[in-house]
Every structure is written in C-alpha cells, then in structure tokens.
Length: 64
Image (cartoon, rainbow, N blue to C red):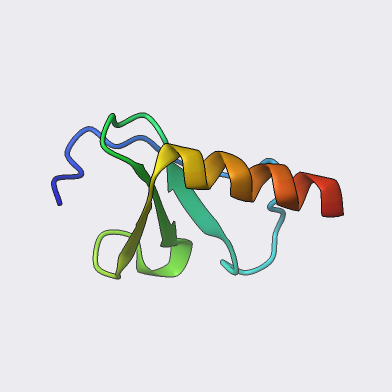
C-alpha cells in the first residue's frame, strides 16, 4: 500500500500517555489507515473502508 501523502494525526484526547496511542490517516481516497504511534514508519498499518471507519467511530462515540 502506498501511504505517500498520508497525513497522520492523533486524537485530541491523547494526552501524555507515553506513546500508548494510535495515529489515523484519513486523507487518502483508498481507505482510512491506523498505526501505533510507537511504530510509525516501521510497524504494521491497518486499513479500513471509509464506511467501516465511520461505523466504528459512531459506536465508540456512543460509549464515550
């Protein structure tokens, strides 16, 4: 997968938790990508369809 041009960001709810966060890139057309902040650039990346990502975020938001 080509992640050239991906703009990674952490949640605004991520504080100083010593890197126990994920980063999301949602600016690419193919999918929404998620990675561990500790492994950026070298670790695995998960890819989700936009529909699946919206459903996930909606479900998590209800739990918050």
